[in-house]
Structures are given as structure tokens and as C-alpha cells.
Image (cartoon, rainbow, N blue to C red):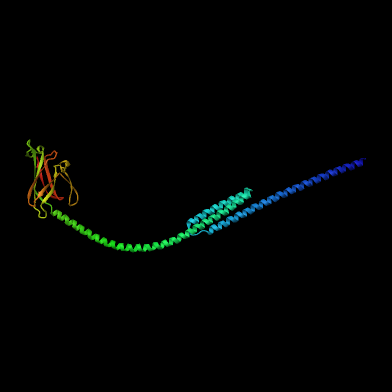
Length: 326
């Protein structure tokens, strides 16, 4: 009885151990199956990443080679190509980063395709610019030929103009010399035609209650001056009206200039200097010696002392003298 009981216990323990072993084996088989699936998935991901890296590297270096091959003599196009190379590297680096951090391989493939498309578009743009540049070069060559032809014509015209200019300079020099001689002669004629003045007499006067002029010698008593002078005969001057400018210089050396009394300024014929005059009078000249007189009654306080009187004709000094007021 005890032996049978012991056999049953042994059987139960054995069955239990076998069951546990079977469960353990099943669990281990399940774990192995799961691990194999994970490894297969990881292998597939690694292959996808490596394939993506290879694809992006291939696309990058092909585009880089194409861009480098497109370089030429135009600095502006070369600068654009270099800029595109920098942009291409940025895109490649971004895609590589995505491959390392993202599992959205569909989006990554789309980025690679976009990089290819943009590179091709840029190549087409450069080709179009090159074609346009070739056309411009042809046009420039034609324009340069026309420019060279025009330049030759202009040079010929310039040579002719220089010759004419040289002749004109010579003619102008001759003309200028003649003009100078003419001016000198004109000045000589003008100076020779000056009507000389002599016997200048200046007297002070005061008006009486009846308006009669009474000679006065004292400056404080006079209302005005009576000026007389003799004109000389000059055969170079035709008879007619002649204008004389009379300049009175007071004892302090100042010209008496009162615009309200007919004073003004003339230019000296010799050098163009300004000459201030006190009064101007026009007389009829008969081409003979004659005495002409004029009265000047300005609003002016005459002072005693020695005065100078200068008379001008045609801008030249025709005569001068002095007079004294007590």
C-alpha cells in the first residue's frame, strides 16, 4: 500500500516536471520567435537607412559634379552655382539627419526626390542663361564690329576737325590780333578826338532877392558855383553836341557827388576805372575856340579852402585847375 502510494506520488511529480518543462520550452520558443521578428524588423530598418544614405549620397555627388561641370567664364553664373552647391549640401545634411532620427522613409524619399528635381531645375536655368549669354555675345560681337567702324569714322572726323580747329585757332589769333590793333587804334582815335579844356574859371555866387547872381568869395555866403572854360579847336572832331563831365574835389580830397544835383559815375577810357563826377553839361561845339559856362547850385555846404576841378570828355581828362573859397 505504501509502495503504491509512493509510485503515484512519483508519477504526479514527474508529470508536473514534464509540464513545466513543456511550458518553459514553449515560452522559450515564443521568445525566440519574437526576437527573430524584432531582429528582422531592425535589419530591414538598417537596410532602409543604408539604402537611403546611399541614395542621398549618390544624388548629392552627382548633382555636385554636374554643377561643377557647369562652371565657365561668367563670374555671375559661377557665383550662383557656388550658392546652389551650398544649398545642395544643406539639403543633403538635413536628409542625413532625418535618416538618423526619423522612420518616415516615405517622407525622406520625397525629400530626396525634391533635391533631385531642384538640382535639375537649376541646371536648366543655368543652361537657359548660357544660351542667352551666347546670344548676347553674338550681338555684342556685332555691336563691337559696328562700334569699331564708327570709331574709325569718328577718328577720321576728329582728325579733320583737329585740322580745322588748328586753322581756326590760327585765324582766331590773327583776328584777335587785328581786334587788339583795332581797339588800340580806336582808343588812339578817341583820345585824339578829345576836346581839350583851358582857362578854367570857377566863381561862387549868391542869389539876390530879385534872383540876380552876385559874386561872392566866402564859402559860407554862396548858393552855387559858376563854372566857365575854353574849348580848344580839334580838326578830328565834327561840329555838334559834346558832353563834358565836371569833377569838383573839396579841400578834404573828397569828390562832391550829389545825385539829386546831377552827380554820377563814368568809366575811364584808359583802364575802365570808375570816376565820380559832380555834374555833367552838354554844349554845342563849333570846332573853334569858345568859352562855355554853366551854373551848379547843389544843396551843399561849401567850406573854405582850395578846391580842384577836373573836366572829362569821352572818358579822358580834358583839363584841370584849382580854385579857392575863403
